[in-house]
Length: 402
Image (cartoon, rainbow, N blue to C red; front, top):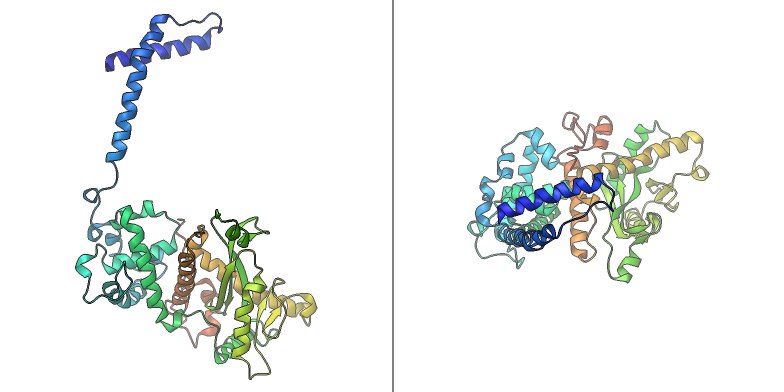
């Protein structure tokens, strides 16, 4: 049959070339050729189609076709040096292993399905070792790689990848909750005073009683089949469904106050709960220390709206806007280092949305305050040498292009 098929293909190609060279009324096909097409060519195509379908069914991922996690590509990567760790995980090797120590304890003691503590260690029953599990979570947050493309690098089947990923995200969030430096709560009054002195120095004395800057960013959000969810999250400015994230940044690039909500809300409305917390922290102080925001934020006793009507002079306004740029640089740093926020957040899983955003913020603060990474850290380290070593943050954020 294969020889007949090849002969029909050759004859068909000859005919195609012939009708391109001749007028349509002069070209014809004899009945024998049409009979051959009906009797041989079409059945052969059906045979090919059935074989392709059979191969697709047989080509589903199987355990024997994947290396075990301990022999996977990521296990080899974890043997790398500081440069490789900064490229892959946005932090140096020793800070990765500082996270790994408490992560290992929780990974072995908390059940994947139940989420409850186990009576005994489950190390032997888990495919992933704790170090590869932590690498899995950090790479998920730092890149936009799809799960179906990433599973082979970790030695996991697609059917189990999401299970280990979600469990790892929860474990890492619990670990970061226990690290005070990773918190993104509003600063204490003493911290505000310290940051205010740094801002005063950076502005050559023009900006006083200001500890940081605030700005918002729009995060992509999947379109929902529920019209209520779609309407609540529709952002008219961006003309798409979105989530709104608003963050306050200190001069070192750390996040000191953050809130997120529906994309239909304005920056000032999302920031309102944090603004109330700033008032509570300074409730007994008459000279409140403020943050600098753009025209999207309401001018108040805890937020300076950087517009000409509120400034003492053009030089004062110029310096206020320079300080306000800290928030834009900080948001850009988050977008480059935590590239998962560039992907569309799921519209049917609010828990996952909150978990991803919260983890990105906590991990950013861990990178800034513990690992001493970040663009603002590099820019302002000379003015904060008493708090951070000047030699510990020699480079900025990395971008792996994923």
